[in-house]
Amino acid sequence: MAKPTTIEDVQVILTQPGNARLAVVKVITSEPGLYGVGCATFTQRIHAVAAAVEQHLKPFLIGRDVSRIEEIWQMSMVHGYWRNGPVLNNAISGVDQALWDIKGKQAAMPVHDLLGGKCRNAANVYVHADGPTPQDVTDRVQGFLDEGYRFVRIQQGLYGGGRTGSPPPEDAPDGAYFDPKAYRRDTLTMIEHVRSAVGPDVELLHDVHERLAPSDAVLFAKDVEPFRLFFLEDLLAPEDLQWFERVRSQCATPLALGELFNHPLEWRTLIERRLVDFIRMHVSQMGGITPARKAADMAHAYGIRTAWHGPPDTSPVGHAANLHLDLWSPAFGVQEWYRPSELEYQMFPGLPVVRDGYLYANDRPGLGIDIDEQLAREYPVHDV
Ligand code: MG
Image (cartoon, rainbow, N blue to C red):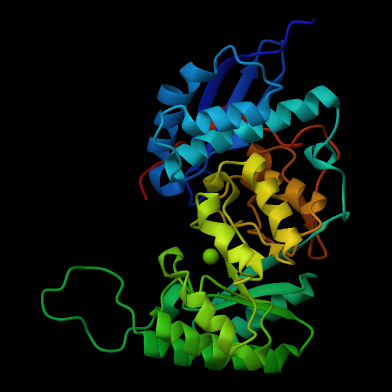
């Protein structure tokens, strides 16, 4: 039997070309010149992820056969006995995506081909419109429509509406104070304004970002129902999942959830009970392509679609991985997109491009994306 290609080194590249601190894992193999890259970006705990990769996973991975992606994933998850969690899962994702990248390069196939081939030529994406007033939001939506986008997430004052009602008590610590009533009222007014301005065909989305108390969330989902959102995102926090039964019994507003999920135990019940319409996990937070494709297949069996998390705190490598899943999965719904800067396109050669609201992959083998390490070093991470 031919000697297997093995893992020779595992490196973490930390860089910050924009606001988010990014972590990319590079797996170097025993075959000269053959390596893979993967996203391990948990931007708020970036150094913990780097330590998990370099100090805990790497010693266990050196010398292992790169072809055995599933086995490496399973063993990485239980190797420290206490498994799961955002730090470990992101670390595992960096390795997992890099191994898929390597397998694609060995097979001379893009990852979507390895998964089973394309179900579509490109992925519909949604972008973010935010503004201080309903008219500002509408103007931004119109700008995106002019560029060819068909799906737009609309926020006024970003998360929580940016407006506080009553002042905090004396000597309260600094922080973001939130008025749920003002948020619900302002947001409804904004959604109504945008919908009446752009008409029924534009797909509008909104992200509550888990800001509401459960009973208020039920009311809000009912209130937005007439405006026909494509989906309402993160209406409730993962710890309040049982409240989704209540929302479902009261209205037909499509629901999306999942960016805070780490483990199948957290999304399986929602799928089995059909309590959400879209799963939108942060793919590196769940452990990479290996678990994401299983979630997509399970969602498909239950008529639920995917909308993988994709703001700037997913690295360009992670966005490429999202797109391969999108192109392959029959359960694809929509892809969140963040419009990378010129610098990011330079730093990450092969970063997917949008034309007329569709995200296109290149046909290169593997994930089809690389990192210019010299340029990445010129933009080291800093505290945010
Ligand atoms: Mg979100």
